[in-house]
Image 1 (cartoon, rainbow, N blue to C red):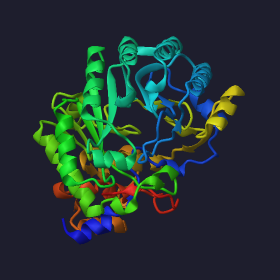
Image 2 (cartoon, helix red, strand yellow):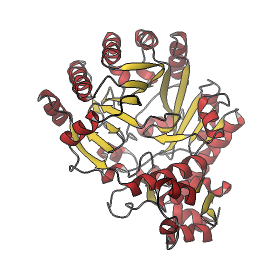
Image 3 (cartoon, one colour):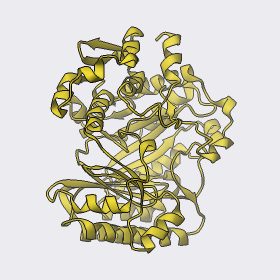
Image 4 (cartoon, rainbow, N blue to C red):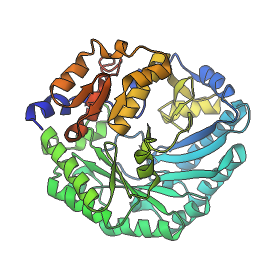
Length: 450
């Protein structure tokens, strides 16, 4: 790749396109009343996904971009669980009939900060209020440093089948620089506990672009992690946004790699994982060949949502907890981010929706084009436009970004079919951004494209 091309596109701040429009476009014009109306109109037979956010951790990792609060005590977590239960009741009461639930994901923060018996009780409530499908998948994010034998047993007993473990880097120099000390032995022990408890599908999260990180340390981490044979990997580039995440100011900016070094690290991790027998999924995920994610990609059925690449085809996503994002066919909603505001809404018997976005027909078209580019690295724009009743010329003609991408060798533009070149797939978000009608309006800072 030419250095000028990498500098032009790789240093651009772009959304990860896990939704479209991205969340900076959400506004208070969509509030709890609107969401209540959308819930009341949910199609009775459509399956739904649930996302439950637990915004607590025992310590702060300085690279973290999540909404979380540090607590050494259990009482704030107990009080929060009471709010979650009340929100579940509020949502269930507004749905026309019990939702058919096909996917459940617990995110954080550290969801396993919840006491084992409380987690089991929460799962019992969900099963009581909603109708789980026979194939419903339950997944949870885990900090291996705090996973106990008791919690692993509770997860297995409650039906959790997939766990995503934060690994990030095994390099002790990097770990000290980001305030997350986690040995390989700790990670192996967590994996063993989960598998012995019946949680058979394991995902690992890795990060590149961290302070003091090198290509060598990235390869070593990827190789060590692959030896534990998780089913999937998600490999993310660190997004340094200290103006939004003040704890990131603890990271030494001079120790962060530049765009060229970040790309080298990402490519080195990808090469190491592929050599270990994993299939690259889209931009930044990897899976064993028999994993359903790899099968979905091969069949052209890969999807993308707030958790990244997925096989989830549900149109409805119900978000529970502070800052949680949900979606119905009408649009997106997000709960109050601050714990105090979230608590106030739920305590008043009111949905905690703080803002959202009502989708237009054009939004749905652009969302499909962006998703296919992110998942398949190509898209037939006329075919997509025909499905949505639009003229492809409206999106292609006069699209200066597309012409520049083609001239710079990032994409091939054959008629109105767009293909990201294999050696430039690392810049797929730049291709997706050519169809983002909102990108340069919000002024919000995103992560680097490379």
